[in-house]
Image (cartoon, rainbow, N blue to C red):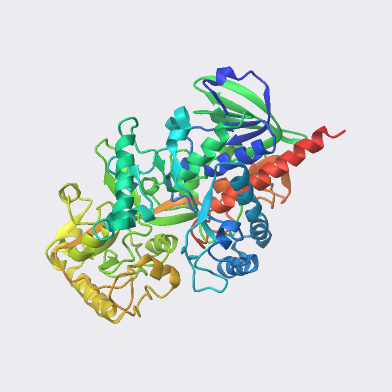
Length: 580
């Protein structure tokens, strides 16, 4: 891969086969698949880092029917996956697009495994999120990237978007769920001690030469593997800190772009077409107000590049948004804290705390309003629904007792119960010796909170949450504590003071609303016809999940698969153009 130092290095009217707008996970995959097909590719990124929100994520890719999945769940079938999606999504998205995803998922993953350094594995147990629906499964569909040695990237490592700092430890050491379990158990298990010592020794060596750890896991590993694979191909050119200014459309379709960088402009021809992978609409002020009313941009934990400006340019050449989604975005509860450099840390509460024993969530009235062990998407949606007083549960309050804080942590507060002073000082964490004192500090009704906790404790001791059905499905129980001695791994009473709380806000973690496409990822116009030469993948493509969060990795999985389909179609279009 060649990197343009400046846009001035690109001649006016330069021609490529495919131009990809956006170097997040889906955009990098589209560039990679096209390059493997032999196409000359220009990959354009508006920020100073590649990876987009993918680099900040868990990196999970939901793709049923793969060889990797069959290794842990040989009984699963594509027919069962289709049945699950039909039951979960219904008419919220076109079934034909879901079927195209299922039909071509295995071939996309197999091509990556055989021809690139993008290596994935199926986690032994990773349930679909609506695991009580027919067709769901507990393993085999969710793939995660293997850890990657960032040192292999050499000078390219500096281009990789760093992970969320609060998801690292010891000044930049990345850890995944396996590492966390070993670190927490290092005093109890020789195997965990050995694993932890290897991690710590590697990180110590890294910090002698690098600003952060080079052992990459989760989304950083996926992006690192994509970047490394691209770096080894001669037919890819990367343009960083470069903006799309215009899509050029002729009688034959979209066949070029106008780019800008620090005062320089260049027109670039795209013989096979243009792939939109700019990350979605989420940071576009007007679209955000229209599609996500009431959701403050300060609650969005996504990467900064998804400004939605490319969407305005696509609409200018006839592209139209899809419709019918249950939600225009995917959600997670997030907590907020000011960093020492003045930036705001946003911590998505995915798996570590809210479904654990000794933890519950209340609204400003001091009452529960949600099943705390439901998916983070449904949790975020529930926060936005009007309560009995007609107001949404924003902020909500994630509350635990001292025992739960020590064992599980709370948001950015690590397990162990140590080092609380900075979190208490800046108000991220609220502490009180009694529930009444906690209610007063939070500004919520003390009597209602006391009654809510007493009711919750009664349910927790019985193991049955008759109010919100917490811990009743395989997915929910997977979020609980398997070592919990009670009858329900998600339910435990709040008994030991002091008591603690953090404030939660609904954070949009990705766009579900995007451009309508066909099964080849071609963008459709107002008449439902494909616009020749224009493709959309990732969060620029209207989600095939229809705004329903069906499983882990349902943005990245389709992102990879439709990147493969878009690149394949662009290649066929290119070959047809040169056929005598």
